[in-house]
Length: 279
Ligand SMILES: [Zn+2]
Image (cartoon, rainbow, N blue to C red; front, side, top):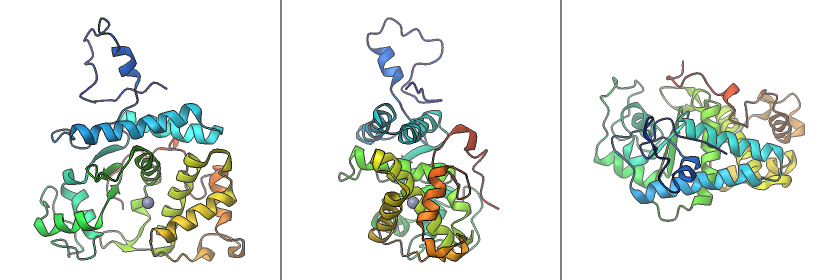
C-alpha cells in the first residue's frame, strides 16, 4: 500500500534528494492525510493519533479477511492520502462549515437564521464554541472531517472506524440528502436514517471481516443507531419495495454494490466530482 499525500508538509518536496536519508523511503510509504487548514497545523499528539488511525486502516487493507473489507480499507486510505477527504480538529472549523455545525447544535448560538451568512463572515462566538465542545465529538460536512482530536478517550482503533464511517458520508454526499430543508437543517428522518445506516454498514464491513453479512451488518447498524441515540424513525415503505422484509434488504443491496442506496467503498470511480454546497 503506497500512499503519498498530495500536499502534506511532512513529505519530501519534489526535487529534494532524500535517497541518502536512512529510513526515508519507509516513511514515504506510510499512509497519511491532508489537513483542512494547514495554516493552523495540528498538534503533534493529534497528528500522531490520526496517523495511527490511518495506519490501522492500512493494516486492514493488507490483512483483512475478505476482499470487500480490504478494498474498503484500501480505498479509504487512498482517498485520505490524496486529500479527496481532509481532516482537522474541531477547533479549526471556520466559515460555512462552522455555520453548518452551529445549525446542528441544540441552541444554535449566533446562527438562528435559516439563511447562510456571506462567505467568510461567520466566525462564531464564545457561546458557540462552548456549545460545540459540549455537544460534538466530530462533524463532517462535504469532504471535510472534523474531530475532537485532543479527546484523550479517542484511541486509534475507534478513530479508524469513525474515519471509515465519515468517509462514507463524504462518498455519498450525505449532507445533500440529510435535510428536508438544506439551509434550515430540517432533518428528513427517513433519508437521514439511510445516510447513517449506510455509514454504519460500512463500519461493519471494515470491522467484522467474514462476519460482515447483510444480516449481521443490519443488526449492528440498527443497534448502533439506537445505542448512539440518533432518534431517527425511518419510513421503510419509502425506501424498499416490501417493507415487511425490513432494513436488511438495504444491507443486501449495499453489499451487492449496485448503487441503489449509495456506495460502501470509496473508490475513485464513484467519488463525487466536487463538494460545493448542495442545491
Ligand atoms: Zn454518521
